[in-house]
Length: 449
Image 1 (spheres, rainbow, N blue to C red):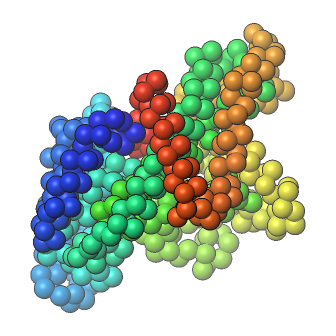
Image 2: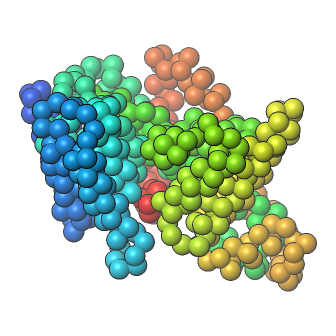
């Protein structure tokens, strides 16, 4: 069951919200916990025990660390932390990297990072240990962000877990945000993603250089609107339940460097690595050489977080190289020209995304050779093949470019509380439902992680 399905929007969500809103305050967490488990079970019933085990084990180890109050970090607390983290990341490794299991449990990377952040923060004394199993379970399993984030720190929702209300204004705002996220996924991502699917079906050996670049741009737009659309839907659903989740994207494609891009893309994952890996290693406080080493560790782990396959390692290595070059000298050069820096970003990021998207390393080489034909991989079947695709997908490219900038959202905020804003949301909803009805339902791309 996915957010962009009729089953979720018109069966699960209305029934759940009705039960949730009529439930007294003291039982709302229990209802949300149970509803989230039901939501997860509808997708992967065989792995719900694994999700619950993560909650139970980290709850127990957190309580063993500090039964009543934070008493300072000692040897006992450190041992308990290590054992808890060994379990958390050991299970993740077993399912994701060992090859022992054929199927990856839905959302395991996201909820593992989230519960690991909680147990580390408890050890550090940043947050008090959660004494209520129901509250901790609700934090880990909340269905809006369970499958693909954002990765929420416990401190961000701790007060709301204890007491929260949902006003009509919050509900309305959350519903509108949910619909806009749905539109990003269904109207833009799924439709422009058909071009990338067509290119894969044609075969990389047979496409022209212009079509290869179109494919890279199409995938870049698809991935952004797919993932940012999910994050918007999660934010809207959270608001409808009385929570304020952190934003996960901030118009990354308007960046002027790869460094800036990754501060704007998947913000909560970047924050996790910064707070729990990069800064503990020393961050950028110990000179350029140590900074580059720390970046190497972070991006190696980021690549492996997405998967242990060779193409993810190539993707991570390419980003590390670009970031190292920017740290060394390139940023100073890029700052001199807004136009040049934007062109640089728009060209290099799609190149890195191809390493992310194409699992077969050999085929990845073929694709890069098509993008840069002086490497030579033989003649294409049709040199002008891109013209028909440009005609078919040109409006979607234009839509993707426009809505990748902050201007549409800024304009929407001006009219959000007026009839024109409501009309815009209704149009987005109508188009979304239409495309959901006439096309095959596509799961969110980041469900694979």
